[in-house]
Amino acid sequence: MKKIIFVMLAFTFIGSLCFAQEAAAPAADPAVPEAAKPVEAKTCTGKIDSITTGDAANNTAPEVAVMDEQGQKLVFVIKDNTVISQSNGEPATLIGLKKDDKVIIMYTTDEKGVNGAQSVQLAD
Image (cartoon, rainbow, N blue to C red; front, side, top):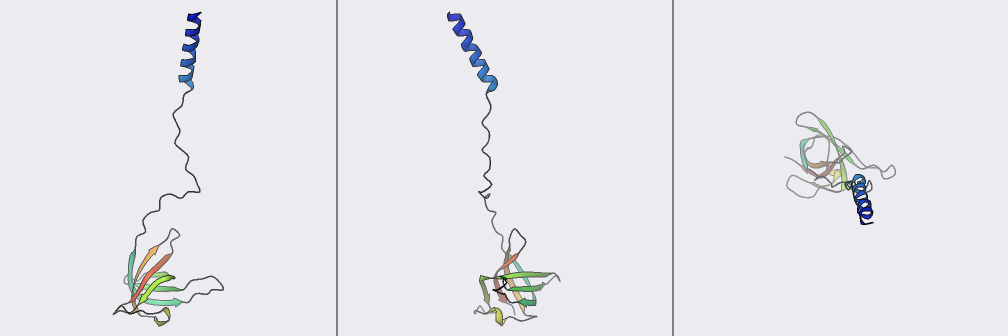
């Protein structure tokens, strides 16, 4: 009788090893975003090519197009928190900017490739 119980326990133990699996890594929850990559601030120096005012009715933000020193045209979205200043650091407004003004723009680019201006400073 002891032999039969021992053999049954041995088969049970061996069978459990055959069906044992390693614990799977938990599946990533698609609702939880991956760790955000640090946003790198960039600088652009150039002359204003055009200024587009925003339109609340069409839900569009103001934009400033700048021709940089390499001749490349870049468009920057002016957000509510964008700081606009004169060359001496005094505050300025979007209305005070005009075509061919030399500017230095600090900006970030989002995952969609949109350049958001953090600051616009008139240059000498």
